Image (cartoon, rainbow, N blue to C red; front, side, top):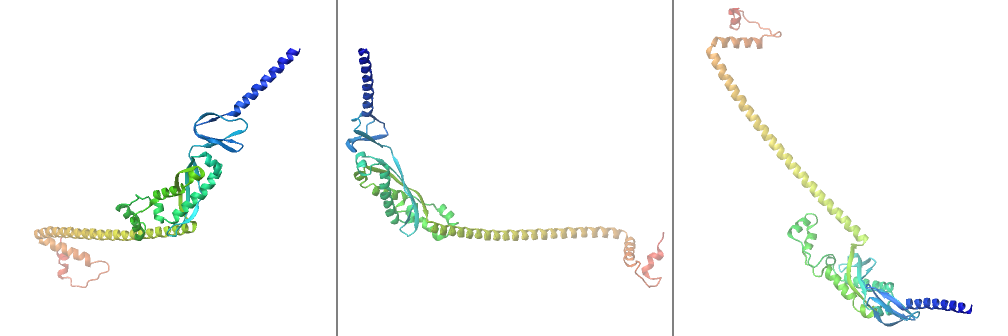
Length: 325
């Protein structure tokens, strides 16, 4: 009986020892993947340098912990800021950046985690952007250094906006947005690795716009300019319509005049031909001509409302007196 109890107790102790060994082994082994880097902390203090090699690593169980950090690029998005340019034009600037942790130990000692790093980047990048924007002209912020316009582009632009504004497009860009963002990146990156263990990879202007008050003025100016252009187009359209109507009226008058001329010519030729035919016919029979003209005279002068008082032997009635059935 005692032997059975001793064997049972030994089995329980062995199981407990196995479980405890598994727990100790699990607490002393940790895994780092390729996208991570880590620090081993003992009672909250870092032990040794950063662990950047992926794979299985060991630590003292229970008294040491692993603090993991991302090795990949991290994003930063700032809040839109109202900043005056060098020309005192107030604009909203919305910037974004990409950064990474290059020194986990210094990162831990300075900002501890990504939230602290984001807060420090807010101050550093915002102040750098403000300094650079306030010392740069508006045209330099919105253009690239290699930006240029062709003569054809200038003609198109001059057709829709005042000439004094289109002429500013030919001004040479000295800085440009690309150079501006590189300068911001260079200035903001100074001392980041030494102080915070982080490095900026890129800074870009995500959005640029006028403040609401100035934007409303710009919109009103654009509306006025478009209304002026529309009025100009309407005026040109009315002038072109008047010219077309004038040309149409002139062409119509020319056509009618030519038609009347041709009608008169045709009518004259027809009358001449009819006169010739009448003359030939009347020359062949003079007495018939005399009779025909007399009858025509009777038809025009003798009607129900006409009364003639003449002698019966008048020459006018010769045809009626001498006529035969």
